[in-house]
Amino acid sequence: MSFRSALLVAGIVLAGLNLRPAIAGVSPLLDEIMTDVGLSPAGAGGISTVMVICLGVFGPLAPLLARRIGLDRTLLAGLLLLALGVVLRVLDGAPVLYVGSAVAATAIAVMNVIMPAIVKQHFPHRLNLLTGVYSSAIVGGAAGASALVIPLENATGHDWRGVSALMAVPALAAALLWLPQVFGRQVLPPQGPRPIRAVLRSRVTWQVTAWMGLQSATFYIMLTWLPKIFLDAGLPAGQAGYLLGLTTLVQVAATLGVPVVAGRRASQVPYVMAAGVLTGLGYLGVLVAPTTVPWLWMIVLGIGQGASFALALLIIALRPADPAAVTALSAVAQSLGYVIAALGPLLFGYLGQVSGGWSVPLAAGLGVVGAQLVTGWFAGRPATLGKANL
Image (cartoon, rainbow, N blue to C red):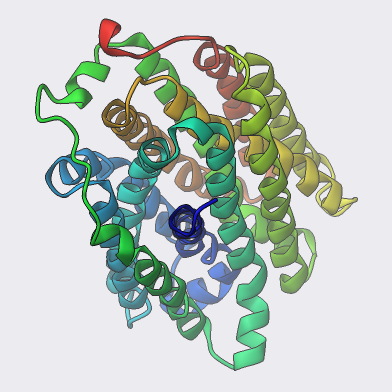
């Protein structure tokens, strides 16, 4: 591998590492944030809901920016905006908390959409491998954030605001690493008919979108509420945070290996089904026995959710014929999918509040996993979203 290619891979990996800490790092600190800011459980769930809504609403900005300034410059802008949002949300008051979260999530939305296209543009012949590498970086960032925020609080003596502000540092580091790509020649999509309008006419788009939304909903529910569930079950805060870190760490292995294997086959249905079943078993374990071998439930859940996430990114990259169409499909699937997913943490928290426990919301979560399996069967079937059927 040449130095230029190695620098590209390093930039993609570091950018991927920044796509989840701003979201995953909130969950272990949720009790502290609720006390400090004065939020109800539903209001605390609203932090993740605001962020996931922004992931959906602002994703369509990505194709517009990519057409005007190119994919590489769009990624740089996203990293800088992410750093700004992370710093903004730790200022005093609930409104600023929500606004800063929205700014950070808007940046993540844009980067989420363009990352599959960046991989297809720079590494078209290593798509499976690089999809696994950067999706592993994404969940690795989530694992690190969820596992380390409490130890960082203890080690530095900072409260949740100081620790959260530190998440701007890796975003700025990634921006510096990506600068060489920005000063190079920018590859702009063709300025013909907008691909995003074309992909809306394909049934493949809607199949992928429905599955993307449901698998994201099951992921963000657990990302937001898992530590709280374990805390209420009697586990200490540190252990609850480590358990969330464990499930996201297990996702790293799943996301690294699954795309390499699944991408070699025309159909991804067997992998999609297996991932959904494992996710459901993880939910069931937390529902039935949250303090009995919780590490086992987290491993099972991590394999299922990590595989689902990696398969979603792989399918988005595989179905279209070129990077412009990848960006368009990614914008539709991730934007509308995250709008669906945004309801998950909010409704989960509301059900927990009105029922006085976590059994009812976890049972509802199992129902969402069932719907994920149904839509995943359609999304995983062989199809090509190319120029002929756009």
